Length: 130
Image (cartoon, rainbow, N blue to C red):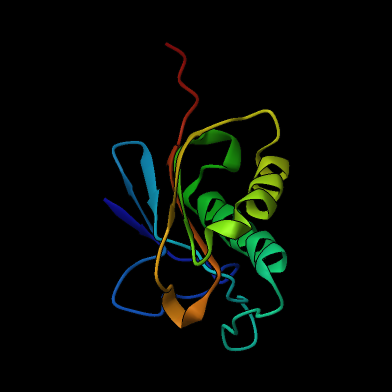
């Protein structure tokens, strides 16, 4: 087991790691729209801006672990408001391109720091074909 830490994504805001690698798999913690520099400040503008930052943070953590967005096999999206689904979905689709990992999307009452969106992922370290 290897714990992942990168300064290219915000540091954990609690007693957890950005990601962990176990048996050729990467499990990320949920990412919110914190900036990695300047004190891990939350972007508050809107759900579109937050989603872009969340996916950039997720990509940085995956790359530090030795993986990538193209090796993601599962994501979970947490939304503070399900009315934001279409906006988040469009940005998510742009970030993943033709790669389509399985996904769950749920509405939650609140997110850390009152973020509007949070995304976590499970990814492979290597390319496997079955």
